[in-house]
Length: 450
Ligand SMILES: Nc1nc2c(ncn2[C@@H]2O[C@H](COP(=O)(O)OP(=O)(O)OP(=O)(O)O)[C@@H](O)[C@H]2O)c(=O)[nH]1
Ligand SMILES: [Mg+2]
Image 1 (cartoon, helix red, strand yellow):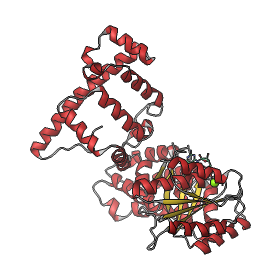
Image 2: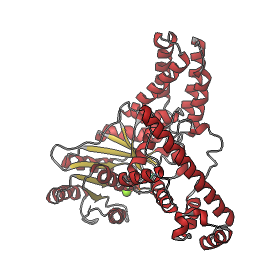
Image 3: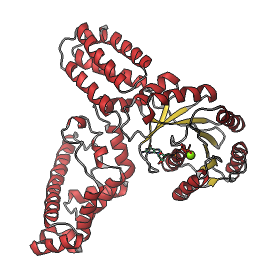
Image 4: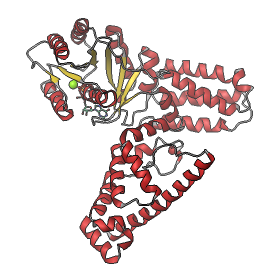
């Protein structure tokens, strides 16, 4: 996971000051020394580190902290606020042109993830914002580039505009916008070519496309794994083109996080999205405050809840709640739930968003992988209709049959049956709690049970 080292170090540091009833200037100084090292080690730009430490120190020895009842907590609050500020403060939204289509140009170096991100962004615009984007293949240099975008378009069932590789990218962009107007596309995403380095020919071409299409957004796509280089690349693209946003890709890898923490303050360009994988749904809006919270081990419950909401069907959730209340939850329901949870992404990544999760020992080794889920699915699918509704009828010989049918072991079948029973018990308790709470008008489940 990205930020692991930084998160560990910062959390250890703030842990020391958390409970302090009194915080001296020396305490703050000591803490800031560690924060500084942690940031430098995470490959954060040294000027950025200096500025950050200065701000946090000033605020920490000031009245607001020293005079408070919980100075330790206050220092942590200051760190979190400044970290949030560093990454851009408010979340920045994607532009909408007053007269459609909204034009977005995707630029960046070779292999940064422009084409992939173009597909992901189109997918997000359609799914979350109900938009109808047109993808434009304006990379005529790399042999397979057009094909790559067309394949993504097919996969997403979205229109891709291309004129082959004999027409100039500027002309392609121009005609694409006319096409978008004619076909009522509200967004135009232009996938441009990448180069190994920032070079003049590339910049000239991009400038021409910019002049001609007058884009509402110019997104620089940068690979977070490239650390400080990402910041330099962002600076030069910004000088030449005037960026409106950055998309940081490959944040699913174990980048130290320096780029995410420096780009905003060095280039004054907000990070708008982060790429978290190769699949078309692995793009998330960047929330500085949530990211700060994650880095400091305070969890990212909001993203977790949003993921749950996006993937859990309202109707089905209600139906499920009803089933839980009447304790008629069956293995069929369980199977369906499993499918929904799977849609949310890898389970261990989800668990890491829980507050304090990185302090749970062994979570890193916990591989709740797809294979395990597949086994559970296979077991359930090997049950008869009656067995799924009345698991109490599953005796020893039936267990043997189910294990054989699903290619698993009797132990695995036993374990699942036991877990299912436990889960049903827990549901009853939760429903009981919720009803009790309702009478008092208090307790409510934080999000829909699944
Ligand atoms: N793990 C991970 N891989 C990514 C992400 N974004 C892109 N990639 C991968 O990075 C590689 C390059 O992505 P492309 O989209 O082709 O990059 P590009 O910038 O269009 O490259 P050029 O067209 O050659 O300039 C592909 O293998 C992508 O699957 C991400 O967020 N996470
Ligand atoms: Mg490309």
